[in-house]
Image 1 (cartoon, helix red, strand yellow):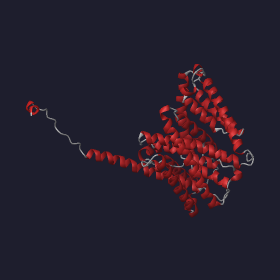
Image 2: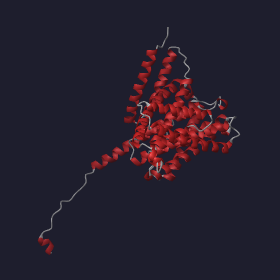
Image 3: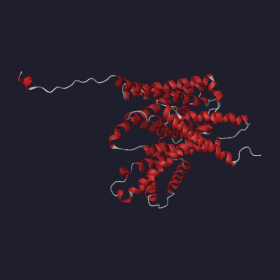
Length: 421
């Protein structure tokens, strides 16, 4: 007798998606990241599966969800990046802060991991990179209550951190992989240039072709083509995520990339329909993928690792270094007004995705995966408390202003006698 029927799986999947939606609504009102609720749900399901004495292997589903999730996150981030002239300075500033923060955090985390687990330097950098990437999937929905300047900064910074962090990870993975070890920086640079050229040509062709397709079911066809290009690029050892990034940037900023003679080839109305539809589908797909990924991650983690003293110490030192580096960077670049920006540095989906993408031949057997869970939970909770504090501070400031009535004087028109005097 089968324990799970097809209907049972459909019911379970539907309930998980419904609960994930409500977690998102709770997150908006309480600032508690929905990621934590999904992980807790996964942990609860793991206890249920153990109680039924079921030992299921989630390795393949987690890997597939990871690849699709990675593509959707990069595409979603690229579609959000509007390259406008008045935004050039904030975008450039966020890019520089994200890059410096990523490199500095990775360097320090690599030193800590190298000492704690006796890793080689390049392998330590590979393990440290996922721990140093901001999670746009957590940050962007969480900062909606901040003022426009701070909200845009976090959107740009987290988006660039995702993209740069992913590129750094795959560059390091290529360097530690024996098959690509001899290529070095020059090989990576050549690979990067080739990928950019292919990406630009493919992106222009996709937009020009799909704007002329009359069928109403072309958006998932477009996503299928993007997935195909990504997978073929990986098989050819190209930096495939750049294909997704450039396509997203190009379709989101058509007014910049289709100028002069190229503008004659573009049907702006049809292309905008593709962009708007793709934006919705990307967000919806990313929501579903994130939901199942974090739930499955919660099922697969070992809670016993959190009670490990070494895990707590290593995680604590890495977290301390993250916020110390962030404080220095923000203090020098932004000034004194760095609350709550200082504490908005959660780790999340990208951290887990890239950790599972570490090549098998360089995995460190004694590395404690509990460090990932520890840092994700701690950084998310720190962000939650900071946002709650900032919201209360803003509400208190408004209350104080209302409690102090503005004084006024009754104006009296001068009389003729007053003028005479």
